[in-house]
Length: 274
Image (cartoon, rainbow, N blue to C red; front, side):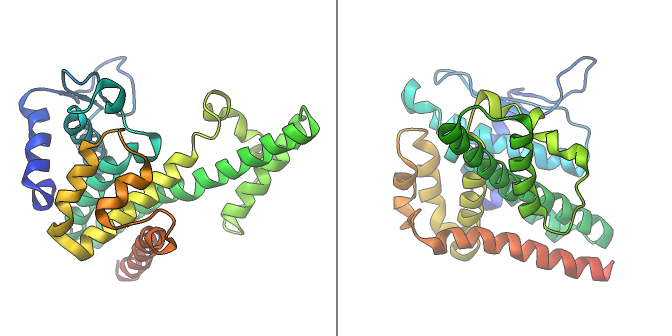
């Protein structure tokens, strides 16, 4: 999947297999989850994960290898410009994941498996785009009210939480009384306020770039590599200039949202077939 996009992209990813830079084995007491450790500009990144061989593990590896390729290419920057901003940190990882997703859905013949693949992808996108946005709106309300009125009671925070969760879920989920306190387990609210907006920003931005790739093909590969090589040396607006794109243009963002809508529409068709 990577090689169809770019031989260079695939060759760099292959290095991580050939050089043993992926810690994928399952061991007792090993930490869960997945992560790409960038390290420094004079060495190379590492991919850390637990690989069990399922489709979800394939997608996770595709995601982390995207990070790895991004970090490997960006090492030509200075140490302070090597690490990319949060808004662009997921660019290569989400793009790489979409490349593999696109490859898998074309190869799967079992409708049940294909539907599961689609729903996994859609649920992940919803969690990244809509849920993170709801949490960002919650934080805005919380901090604005604190600045205007001072310390908030737990009941006030609970009310803000439910307000934005209900706005997201609508009538699709019945929220029990216990759910009102769920804001308290999300560490970002305490340690990195307003951090979560970057997930929504980065996901839609990358889906918009992927939509552009699907329509423009190989003509955008060179510009895409320039984006990755820039590391953190440019602003988000400057990153997109080679593509002739503007963050202030609503149609750019609509490309990402259209991708989500298309996935949902296709999933519904698969569901009716299975």
